Image (cartoon, rainbow, N blue to C red):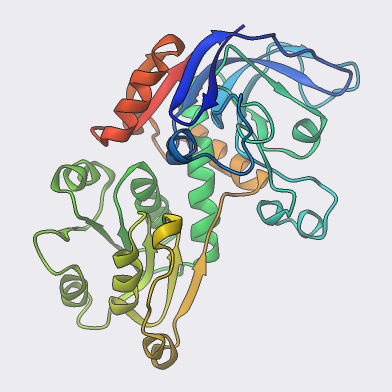
Length: 345
């Protein structure tokens, strides 16, 4: 089969590799769509301890089941299946508690398990039994289903934020993830949603996803503006959806007393030591948390939201490339010129 193989840092080669072999407990999926995530870009340029070249990346995908092992009952030939990233081992204390994204083994598609930047992807026994692989209906396109994975990560983050009806939410960073957070926050009960971004073009794109207020932080003081928009009290919920230390610092300053602050976007390792005014946390009684990935139930919930029409994923897909042009696809994703870039093997 044809696959995009990460042979070394900054070396992604489309080549022929052996087609995966199905055993009694696994499933083979013919990949129809696989979106490029920011983590794929980081792996390409900086590597990852869980990815050993030569490797096939890609963890936001969907396709059709073309082979199923004799012991598999969850899927059958012809099923349309969406595939996420984090795969619980199913046996450790975290997985038993239902928080498999905190699994210490930390399996993931496109990491330890070969991903979907290929014509076919294998779902092994662990993925079939415990992973984020779910069927979806005919009226949902393969591209839309592939984006259930990033949407599921948003559901995990917002669930942790304990959103209440009437909350004001601010999202710093309006890439595809930031815009999904805006939309789902509204669905969960936020009555005022504020979008913040440094880049004016990126902020203009965010207007398509229904924020009440848009703030360009390179043109005005975002903290002062959020306070102005909230009668001087601050936002109830703030999520940082960008890899910027300053966003985390600003989040505390624009927070209402007892606000929930979620550091959703990870920071580069060289910039992850951030100086925060902990007196602000102390006196405002702030709740600060992180969010990483999701669990399979979030992936199913994301597919249900897409299938119901509650979230329209079509506006999130801005570029499409065949597998042979995957290097162009990565360049498009890194340019931030649009939203999600989808590779179609």
